[in-house]
Length: 439
Image (cartoon, rainbow, N blue to C red; front, side):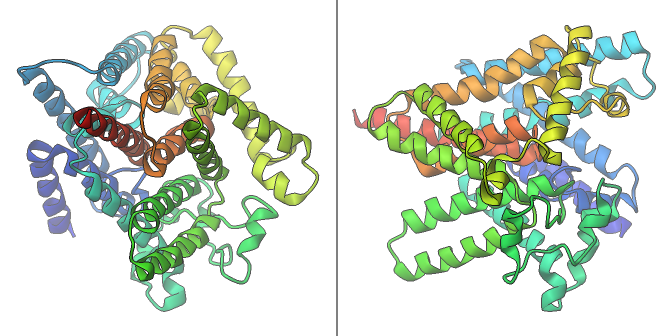
């Protein structure tokens, strides 16, 4: 096993130095304690430093990407790259000050790597800097999502089809919260009972290889967006469309094991934006209309289906988010400029874990980092959609999944989050560039 881990790390080194974007996908499949907790946790049983080494390679990969940006003869930073690098710098300053003020134990380099890779924009800087307009790695990204979903299916349903080899990658074995649910085979959605998820959120609860059940829901949402946009809408082959619809159904069943509402909100908002965009409505009005619709449904919240989509005031999920926001605001007001310097464990001990991303960044790294994260995720996304001359379900859908992830679950799966945000922007960039060339 040590030889296999050594081989994985050697391949990781080669990819980090020579193929940084491919390393991101490699890291997402094998190294991330968010997107690949089951796999990284399994290998960490044999080599305790496995995950830190993979994070270190990601940090080196980010530095190589920044150097490549600076080496370009025409050094022109686009706004999103400029904001992301400023965001990265502020995070570093906050961590350095936090370690100095709070006199933390541990290696300061380790703290900087964690801050950059787990909560900072390292993945975005790497992926976006290599293909911000050309869609070079679109197919690789799509295959990455398909592989993650295939592994999730085999972990959750493998025993039902007599394939038990993948159960060792269930994250429930590797020190995650709610592990007893993830290892409970009776809490799995099936064709006979999947509808129960709409009666009670959390009725099924599986995480597969992810660090909790939330990433499973978001990966499923992205998988459905890929199938709809790339095969059902674009392809003319009727048989291929039917096959794609079948796999959409399979992914939907997989999604029921998480039941994440955020992806549904994202798809509804995506359709609303595209529909009204063609009628020349401004995007900001669409956002307001969508919000009014959601609030209207909440007012009419008289049965279990509506309760599922909006969540009752007594819903544990809703209550925990409200509590997290209150605690986060209270802490931020007393630690306004540098947060707590990236002390994630210290915040957890104080039960401070707001699920809205800019607020999470505020308590971790302070107001300047929070503003930059808001600009990078929300303002740039709004700007890209507003300026686009043509919108696709693929581009807008990926952006909206990232936006609703940030609004409801922070990054939830850090690799997927930055990849879909980047890919959504790249899709709109490429369409705008194509339109510019034609004109």
